[in-house]
Image 1 (cartoon, helix red, strand yellow):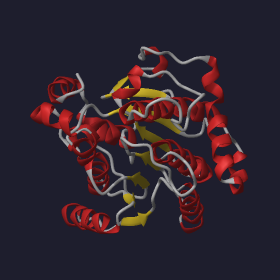
Image 2 (cartoon, rainbow, N blue to C red):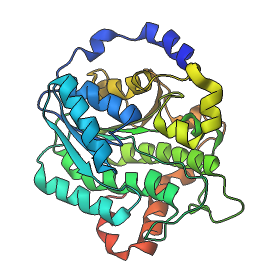
Image 3 (cartoon, rainbow, N blue to C red):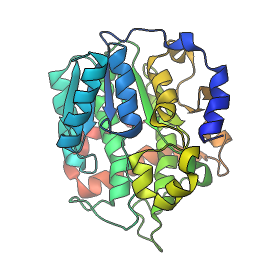
Length: 313
């Protein structure tokens, strides 16, 4: 169901009218917007008239992607923000500056991620997969919540992965210091953590609609570089980036979504309720303390982040 055939079957039940909307006047921040699912999402939003904020690490690739999006959509309201999400201090600086520069943010799409197969630390001493996939997402989202709350119909969408289905939340080794390092399992654990964060954010911030989703297995540059054998083996069975972005776009644009419960996990346009119900490793009440565990990790390497203790879910 996660491959192209699954998408082709599932899309028969999609309602095209759900996306017959205008995004004019709405601001969308998309991380990892220069390629793959992020770029495909940015293209659709731009065509709908939305203002797009592309958060990218590589300036050259970002500028090339922006030029293509503007050229095809005819929408010049596409802005580039160069940020390395693995550097927590820079993410915090960016988010704080964004709040000062812009008066509205309607939709935040946490799409960017990484899968490193060797344990590496960033300049702040954090394991890079965790720093990018969790710390960067946490800081960006948490810092922008006040701006989102002041905006009309605010939403936060996080792109997870089917890999989270085989993982239960671990508290004892967030930095992947114990045992042998398996980048694929670390990535899956990070994606499980994103689901738990979404559930907790939804509880703490009822004015914002939070969702997390699995895009299926998609033919993206990230999959090609991080899992080359899998990419080669699956070949044309992988979904296109447009197919992978379909659910993200629907969650970002459809009016139907705002009437759904917040904090849910989606596969396609199918709401799967609490993620714990579809995992082989269900959540526990201890999951509620996970955001606090993240904050403690953050303070150990960045004591200046005490401001983020405000409104921790």
